[in-house]
Amino acid sequence: MAPVALGEPEDILVYYSGKGELNPPQAYKPSKLMYQDAGNGVFLVTLNDPKRLNCMSMNLAQELTLIIEHIVRDDRCKVVVWTGAGRAFCAGGNFTDSKTTVPADVFEGYVHAGIALELPDISLAAATRAMIKLPKLSIAAVNGITVGGGVNLAFVWQDFVYVGQDVTFRYPFGELGLTPELGSSWLLPRMVGMTRAKQLMQLGTEFTAQRAYELGLCTEVAPMTDVLSKALQAAQKLAAMPQPALRESKRLVNKELVESIDKVTADEYNTLRRIIATPETKAAMMALMAKT
Image (cartoon, rainbow, N blue to C red; front, side):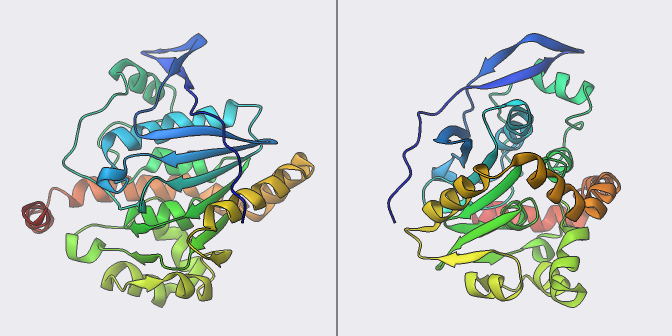
């Protein structure tokens, strides 16, 4: 399948700083994400920390909040596609790296505007709310290693999901002493059933791309070399359709989820902040850090 021509990575705009809205907004160059024009109203977001398998560091998590707001306001963007750089889509949370290139006053501005939450937002509650309420269509092109929160970024946040045939998925929450996040506590049981959701999240059962398809978690399984092209092709098809009707269709289908997501993510946010302070979870996380 022929690759889609992509524009050069673009700066995104930040809209808030301190206690006010920026007018005009200011340009910001993401350090852990790339935003590229794929043509005809389609934009590609690439998680761009390949040496660390695009893990969910604080820097990446903060930039997700910024870029979602940018996508909402970018009138050129009709459909957004998400993928990962290198051999991973997203290898889950990195709880030790607190470095960030997002200016503190900018993130404070997003908190003050109600778009971000006070740190630590390990459950990505704010970004999850924004993605679930995003009126534009969103597609994942899952190209490699996908673990923990990366699984939720692939399946829970998206309208369509294209998965490379060799990709496997795993939630390590149980063994790490963690609890569900990114809206998965509500949506995953409704997607695969209560028993299977507990199997995946609590037992940490690894599953393949084909099994994800059988469970109804993804749209299509594709050869590894074609997964991004397939996703972009679908995005181009959707972007050519009348957008008001597509967005209203998404609103109607997602109505119950949208109405529930603030409460769901507040519970996930508070639960995870509480649970990471327990001795058992601290010990599990220390054991993980010793291995890595």
